[in-house]
Length: 161
Image (cartoon, rainbow, N blue to C red; front, side, top):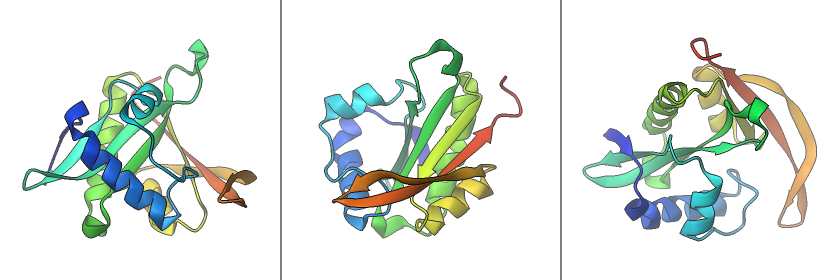
C-alpha cells in the first residue's frame, strides 16, 4: 500500500468511498456525495492524499479550511475515509500520519476533527496520532432529521507555529 497525491482523475473512487461512509451513518452529516466541483471548492488545494493498494484507491484524506479569516490560516479540519473492504488494516493511520506531515509542510499548525461520539474507531485513530479531545458539541446538527453531537478534537503541531 502506498500513499500519493490525490488527483482529480481519482474523483469517482473518492466519491464511492465517501458514499460508503455516508451509508454507514457515522462519518458525516452529509446524506449524499457532492459533485467534484463542490468537493474541490471546500477542500484545500494541497494536502489531498490517496492510499492505493495494487493501484486501486482504497482510502483518501484531505483538509478543509475552518475559516476565511487570516488569523486561522493555519487551522484546518481533517477528513480521512477508507473503503469498507479495507478498514482495520492500518490504512487510516497511515493516511492520517501522512496528512499530518503534509499539513506541516504547508504551514498548518492545528488540525481539528468533528466526529460523531459513537465513531469510536475514528476517535481512537485521532488520539493515536496526537489529537486530543477538546469537548463535545451537543446537538450541533441534524442528520436525517435526528440531532447529533460531535466530539471536537485537535492536534497542535510541535514544529509549526
